Length: 149
Length: 149
DNA sequence: CCGATTATGAAATTCATTTTCAATATACCG
DNA sequence: CGGTATATTGAAAATGAATTTCATAATCGG
Ligand SMILES: [Zn+2]
Ligand SMILES: [Zn+2]
Ligand SMILES: [Zn+2]
Ligand SMILES: [Zn+2]
Image (cartoon, rainbow over all chains, first blue to last red; front, top):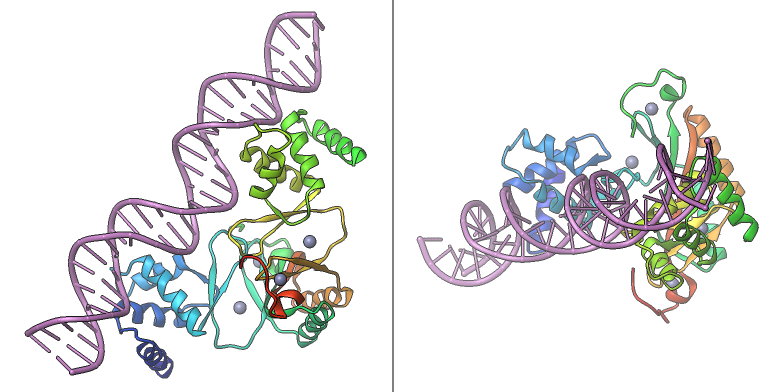
């Protein structure tokens, strides 16, 4: 973690940026937080370390991390976007519509078939998103908990 | 087309709704328009038939069609949503980030693998979205036309 | 420390979508 | 055919996430 934060710091410096306490808190908070957080969730958590951090800074910092390749923006159709660390390898998502649980999965076979499809259409892919919505084991079995999203 | 419009009319009636000229124009316009239209695009086209139709009615009518199962809401991450007729069988999309072209594809193999994945996690899927973003043949070959989206 | 530049947070803005509301249109009943 | 209850309309207002603006503060390099 320390290593990572220092590396990011260096990259920001190299790109003509400056260090700042607020941003450092946000970045560390982001990597410590559970994945798939909204800006609002992260802002709340980060404010526990530093009451004065504005959500605008959280927005800006996540855009920055995305530009540097450390974060990925997600959209599960909830209105607000979510973000996850981009350090782990590529994966797609199962999203529970009742409790909000997000299950990650990686399926080489599906990825290969996607490549075939694009090739068949002369299409040059740069990114893709695959999300499966429904109900997780717990919610599907009737013992549903939590708010519906 | 006539048959379809009458059927929808009947369903609206049966559900306690009333007929209306504005809505009829929007519905017919939707099925005549090219697929994957935005509300704004459809509003513009529909206003050529009836200058007085407000975009709110287009919003409302598409939500209605979606509820009745005749339309599908899409989100290619452009800010505004798009809609397509839900009469054709399920398919996924290749979206060109330069010219905006949308290529539809259907891959049973991918769908089957998705089922396997969900089963493996005890997840009960109700919907999914698979979009591949990149550049279509024409745009990838350098002879790019059109605005970037 | 200086001067230049970047980062910050609050407030204002944007933009798609939704809600509100008073006026209008439609269906249904007698 | 009215008459009335109810649904629909379009304009305007509200919403809400995300972005921009701007004056102030922090940081860097020298
Ligand atoms: Zn669940
Ligand atoms: Zn993930
Ligand atoms: Zn293209
Ligand atoms: Zn389509």
